Image (cartoon, rainbow, N blue to C red; front, side, top):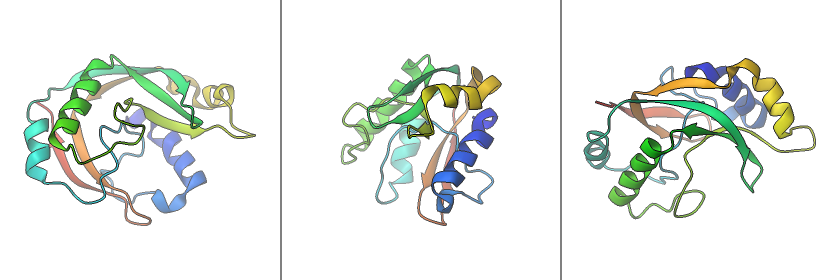
Amino acid sequence: MPQLESFVRSRTEFYDPALLSADPRFCHAHITLLAPLFELPSEVRVQQVVSRLSCFDFQLAHMDVFPTGMIHLRPTPMEPFQHAVDALQKAFPEVTPYGGPHPVPHLSLDVLSDSVTLRSTRRLVGRLVPADCRAEHVDLCWYESQRCAVVERWTLR
């Protein structure tokens, strides 16, 4: 989501600058489909799932807070993301996703604190939301302090 990249990148820099990536393909503003992967999966298995997915349009407009305090945007429609998550979970049953067995696709924005509220985040995000977006690829990303990068990118059909 390029239109939200500068906002999410600035929040990443605030919380943990070691997770900023120098990789120009890396997108800090992203919707996670399946995580955590503690080792790189078979790229063939990922390709088999991704090859069945098509590009689609969606919007990021609904801001919410998880019980953990994570402020996030939920995509609409949710179905294409949920379809991708379900297919990846079926292909990688050994992965226990963050958020439990039924993860909610979302774009993380910030975390509640004494100085961060849902209202303050809405104000800071301002005209960036609602964001009209298009899902065109799936990235396999590696997250490690000082080493965040895109490992592989697959274009959706």
